[in-house]
Amino acid sequence: MKFFHKIPIIFILCLLCLLLFSCTSAASLERERQKISNPTDYLESHGIEQYASSVPVVYNNGVEWYARAFELVEQAQDYILINTFLSNLLDLSEPLWDLLAKKIIQGVRVYCLFDSSSYFQLYTDRNEVIPAAFNHLRELGIPVTEYNPFSLSNSFFLPMLLDRDHRKFWIIDGKQLAVGGININHASLGLPPESGHIDSMVEVVSPKAIEVLIGSFIDTWNRYNPDTLDPLDFYIEDTQVPLDVSLWLVDHHWPARSQATTMFDAFTLGAQKELWMVQGFAFMTGALTERIANAVDRGVEVHILLSDNAGKPNYEKAAKYGILDLIDAGATVYMYSNPTTAFLHLKLMIADGYLTAYGSTNYNLRSQTLSREISIIFDDEQIASAAKAHVDELLKYCRIVTREEAVSYRNFVNYCYYLLMQVWG
Image 1 (tube, rainbow, N blue to C red):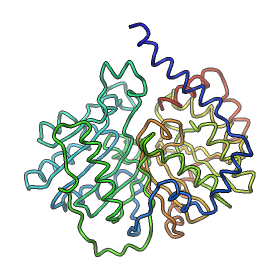
Image 2: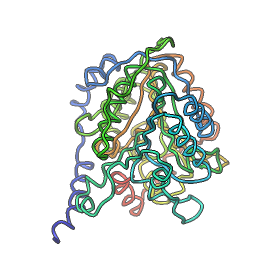
Image 3: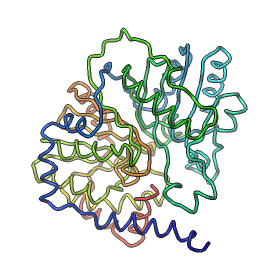
Image 4: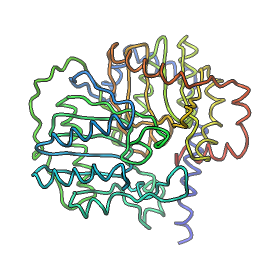
């Protein structure tokens, strides 16, 4: 039995050794870059499919998205599928749960898939646990499934424990799809300073992408719920909405669909002039940092936005430790520090003024391996321009991090947190 207690430690050590010593030679990295003559062709050659889509509508804070979510739920006639990482019971979310229960009474099918991490959420301003929504939804009669429930058996095998569904997406009647980073919790649904998060959700009409995600949702649901669903029961209506743009759907599930790294390669190795990466924390792997350095060496201007005000000291220490690596790779690093103490939870990439990615995917080892992630990528100048306009607004509350400041964060305690957060953050 003692051996099984050591398994999590052994796994962490092996994973960190892989992290520290899996450097790519400059020659092999350049060979990989030469394969990317066109980033979208590269995505498709690695199994990330292209689908016709409407022009996306972007909601850049939780209040905007929550209002739109209510509209979508109220308009639903057939079914609602909600997949999110964190779902809590609080004053902000109760009206949504009540509305979903009302829609069930009206004959609308509702299915909610949430991660077990919802049980471990604390208010940022006090050491108080926020109730998860699972029991409340069951009391309301809302079908809910818990992704990879925490159990004693899983605690002996860390990869099982770390397998989390970090995706956030909504499907309404097979007509509308929303993807992004906004949870159903206190940190996502309100405007700062009440929430502490700034994030986005992107709404599109894309029948083929919806069909794929319905299948993904049902596969996941059936894995954890004995009341199985059949994808043939979820009709996808022909749309009259113009499908004028294309999207590429990243539905990462390692190792079967290991797509997060492919997306990062398309952006970092495919960029020719300019790359913007928005992300709260600097937990980037050595391999991703090398790709940023490769982009800089090729003359690409790389800009990375990080964030203060995480509300979690261990996360902030870990993130600040990694800043020096990004600066030494040649990136310009900005620190977002809104006077309302909002945390920038957004995951956004923009390359060369035309390639844009929104979603849940962090720039770290977890998102490239054990976490399930979702992102959507657009190849359109107007979409990229709108995303860059949002970045410009964020830059009003940013400062450039100097190398001297970054060096000040390089201490042993921060390094230990940095290693831990590569696996846990």
